[in-house]
Length: 234
Image 1 (spheres, rainbow, N blue to C red):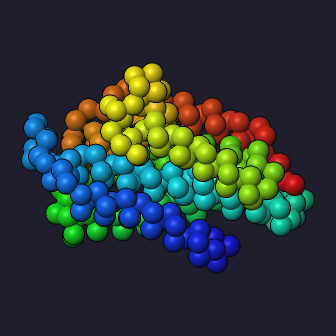
Image 2 (cartoon, helix red, strand yellow):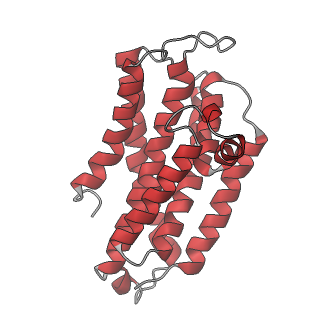
């Protein structure tokens, strides 16, 4: 069902790639940041932001719309009379989304390295490992949206509001330092902002702040529990 939805496949890959290219062609992306072993603004800020956008687009917008469509079209109602547990359905959809996310991340990093001479992460395995809590947190938010949204349009609307709201506070539309201090602080510890910070640290090879990891784990547990509690078959 996901493969048949052309827009659902293209948009989560195309939009982050557009953000990556526009930032790569803009001024200032090639400036080297002191103390990062020669890494540039593009490496430390743009790439982590792009990867977070990929995960958030798939997890918070795309996945809930698919699940809401399954509910609306009666697919979930038919599954409800089988031994399938709601968690099985949510996990299956999350795994499909994870495959889509890995594809989007691979495309983004490939274009960044080939077209803009981006530097790979200082510790690639650590960066991949830190991508796990990022995916878990944003996907948990998406499953909560899917659990409560009554229709496909509602799921898309709620997902977009959350995506844009978290993105605005997390630096998607400009440096977080330009935001009012209370907004910047809250945005830093929402799943989007915390994800950018975690992936940025992974790219440079510096220790990840415990507060950012706690924020991701907390979002995963709270949103995941809410999704399992409020999930409806029809």
